[in-house]
Amino acid sequence: MKRWLGILLAGFSLSMLLGACAKKPPAQATDTVTDRKIPVGDVTEFYYTYENINYNAFYQRYRFWAEDGKHFFYHETRERPNDYGWTTEEDITASGTLALGDDEWAQFTALLKNGTVRARTVSDEAGDSGPWLYLYWKGDKGTDQEFSFASAEEEKAFEEFCAKLAKRAQ
Image 1 (tube, rainbow, N blue to C red):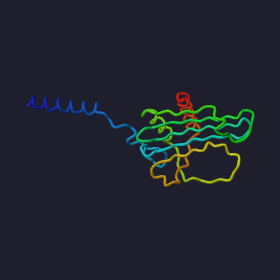
Image 2 (tube, rainbow, N blue to C red; image 1 turned 60 degrees about the horizontal axis):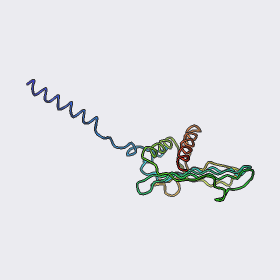
Image 3 (cartoon, rainbow, N blue to C red; image 1 turned 120 degrees about the horizontal axis):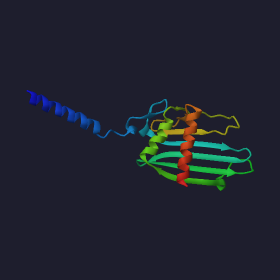
Image 4 (cartoon, rainbow, N blue to C red; image 1 turned 180 degrees about the vertical axis):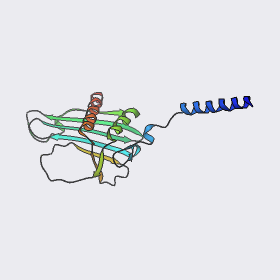
């Protein structure tokens, strides 16, 4: 009887050990973003755009996207020192594209986690520099794409993350 009990306990211990060591599914398989609980795998594209047309005009765009199971980052900076107005492609001072690994994509989506998505709004108000944020995802119906971060701190963390990626993408 003791022998069978010992074998049973050893088998149970082994199964517990193997279960603990088993490869867990990637966090992205079940993670969601925003108040809409959008599955991470449904995120197809994200844009962050800031533009100042006042003196020392400036434009910054960050874009994240998924294509054929891979993830990418693009950045573009336009500057018009000592001048006003909208910047154009002639004013590009830095740009680049970077293929993202799974960890970087997970960092990106984690930064969106507490944000909000709502239907796009049209405003005729002048003077807004942005940033304008748009999240494209499977099921957005072409309307529910306007994104906002939960706090200024989370937006700043996103901008810092993008700045690090932009340095690598040059």
